[in-house]
Image (cartoon, rainbow, N blue to C red):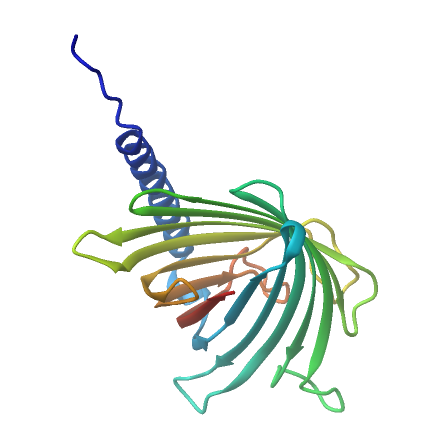
Length: 255
């Protein structure tokens, strides 16, 4: 009697390839929309973001997270720090692929446009809730992150609520599996309008990233690549009016 062998890994790999292809195509589509307007309608800037993300496993399926993210602006001119984010969180691993999180973020905004005697610095505090889905296949990794933020911005009365969702696809190169191609897209939407100086309900921004990932060990890997950030500034009438081109250099530590 002939034995029939079902190759589940092959099926998973093919399914993963389809998902990764869809994720990459969606990222390209969303990123391409940033150029729907004429370049003359945008303010443009060259920037560098260099975040460090650390995730730690705790007993009883709990997780700890810390993020420190300096952001630099105007690199084509004098260059200066633009923002500093500090973002801790506590999570719980519901299943092998799904986790939920509750976190806090402090955002310092430096060297901002201002009219004296106003300060060029203002800060923001946030709390956020997050759902994270991660799925690994033979050569692919898919990450989906959905986050709801409640924001308290200095000089703005009230609580601004923002929804954001990110999809990331990562493909390990067969000839060098420690290297991977990465594409990601994240869209942000304000859910309410807060005063005359705060966020306005509707589209806030889109971030599109393409780059490479290098895995050094099971504890440490990093991304380097290009990120396109399309912003909707309330002070200018167009839907999207700030276009930032940036080098994104990010480090991932898993303990």
